[in-house]
Amino acid sequence: MPTRLFASHHPALRFAFCAIALLMCFCSLQPVCVAVSLLAAACNLAFLSGWRKLGRQLIWLLPIAFLAMAANGLFAGLGATTLFTVGGMQVTLEACAFGLSAGCMLGAVILWFSCYQALMDRDAFLYLFGNILPLGSLVLTMVIRLMPQLLDKGRDIAAAQEALLGSQRGGLRERTRQAGRMAGTLMSISMEDSIAMADAMRARGWGSGERSSYSRYHWSRGDSVLALILGIAALICGFLVFVASSQFEFYPVLPVLLPWWGYVPYLLFLLSPLWVELAARVRTGVERSRA
Image (cartoon, rainbow, N blue to C red; front, top):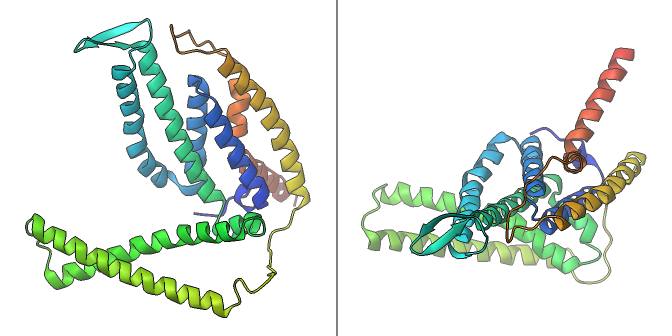
């Protein structure tokens, strides 16, 4: 994937945008706001990481949303609009709407975390929190780095076992034995890598005193302009989300959702990475036409 312009801005700006988007998503269970946040997160993830990754996320997120709707509809028993009865339990429209909104909010949160992962790499996170929480930042970045490595090594071990023992799995006992051998081999490799990493860190003076660090990030004039625009937009959208959420209640009767202009600024704010990229392309096109 090509490098996107928003991902090249200062890490503090990128982290603030993701944090505000997640906070607004967490604080509002209003159906339209949840739908707007879900749509914006999906568009941003497709823009930052590609449609294939978005498709892999939606394959298991959409069933979770409908499962939440079914579970809350069957077991909540709240609401005045009865849709049907199952085994003496009333399934109401309000309970189904609440469950679907909660499931979609969970999906939106997961998609926003995927957008955060695309915008904030390991170096950017260490730059922001390395001096504030040095040990916690180190542990978190090591976990983020080691998990993909463990998955890759697990695939290599499985391929080696298949080459040595054949592709025939056998019964449950044999499959369990093969899984145990693979887990033991993976744990041994992980422990060896951890010891080697600890020795390397000790040799480089980790924990011996105050450390210095090199930073390739610099706050530019463009970061200031974008931070001012996003800050004003965040305040406006926060107020709009608060108004929409405070005037909506699922129970006892689901109110009718009417068109409202306040959803548009909220959507435009959440699509900020796309607008930044579009503005840069328009500016580049104008400069080329003048030249």
